[in-house]
Image 1: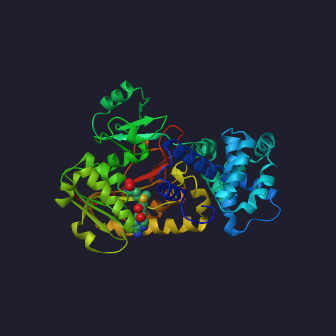
Image 2: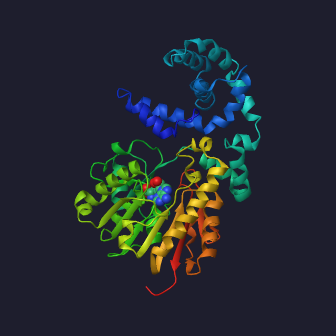
Image 3: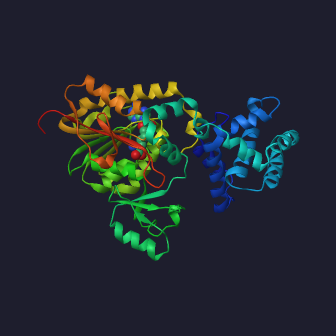
Amino acid sequence: MLAGQGNLKSQLERAFAARTTLSEVDRRFATQLAFGTARMALRLLPLLDSALKHPLKPRDQDLRALMLGTLYQIHWLGAAAPLCVNGAVDATRTLNKPWASKLVNAVLRKFPANLLAESLAKQSPAEQSGLPPWWYAAWAKAWGPDLETLIEASNSEPPLTLRVDGDRDTLLKTFQDAGISATAGALSAQAIYLPEGGSPASLPGFSTGAFTVQDEGAQLITELLEPAPGQHVLDACAAPGGKASALLAACPDLSLTAIDPVPHRVARLKDTLARTAGSAALGQSKVAVYCADARLAGPWQENAPFDRILVDAPCSGSGILRRQPDIRLLRTPEELAKLCALQLALLKALFPLLRPGGRLVYCTCSVMPEEGEGVVTAFLRSEPTARARPLPERFGLLRGPGRQRLPTAAGPDGFFYAALEKEGAA
Ligand SMILES: C[S@@+](CC[C@H](N)C(=O)[O-])C[C@H]1O[C@@H](n2cnc3c(N)ncnc32)[C@H](O)[C@@H]1O
């Protein structure tokens, strides 16, 4: 991640795949350590860098990550500093860099736990957020009074949230009987929260498909689309298929077209849909999956006009920062501007495929106003036949033509929602 090798989740997956003997406990600890370090990296980096006489070479970013992880363990996990430092020194040999053992030892010994705590406490609120300055400034401007809770939620460990497609009370009772603490979500009638987290595969009901892991904010999309049997629905940014599978579970008689332009993501989309709908339903061609760019015409448009279109647009992911803490190190303002241009282009290309009286739902797991109200307002200015449908308060704060949910520590992720209807008879 620090060395620009892609996102943390996929790097961890690769590392675990190469170490099949690693126990579940060790995997969980490694994940906690890696994610926690990414969360706090921007707080620790200035301290660490000021303790280095010379900056580390690009090829030695692994040493930087090792030292950051050690400081994270000392301050946030309360681990004994001498033990952690010895562990880091040993790890220089595992990294095949025994020459660095003295350096790592000397740098880390400059941070006894109390001094580290003092230095961190002296940081300004912007530094304590652990966000890049441009990101902090954008949130401070947009969410002033809610800024503190937003940052706290974004830096917390996310809850495990399930979507139950059967009877929620029955599954809650099953969990209760098994001594698993679980509560019903307040926004979606299908949501269950497991505050203690854990592996979904170890929960009762996993093998029978009684639930799917899905954030409560994401679950609300089905309700916004209000799918009805026989409708032609387009999921225009569909991979890996979470929302498409929820739609099919709610209304199996849909004719669903699901597209995404990234081949390996389309493979995951097909897997998800096959698991949800059963391979027989996929074979019956009620569900058609294409690897395609929604801005470009192609065979995927065969079922147009659509009664419903879902644009779950590619976005900054700022509403799910707690699930992908490393995105703070990867995103840039320039990239955000490009994403907004792509989101607007998707709306402009897709709205003509909606039948009169039909509904297009636009959503992003973003808390950047330009990706939500900014894009939809610009689109409405350019499209006289589009009207924003008022959304219930449950969908969050009223923001221009849509609503914005900010993430909450024990609740849903951050999402922007808008439902656009096309003038004309159904
Ligand atoms: C937020 S994700 C969608 C998540 C998905 N709806 C779900 O619930 O699992 C956004 C998706 O948009 C896709 N995407 C990016 N550019 C696109 C484009 N030009 N046309 C269609 N999809 C695009 C990305 O590959 C990514 O899979």
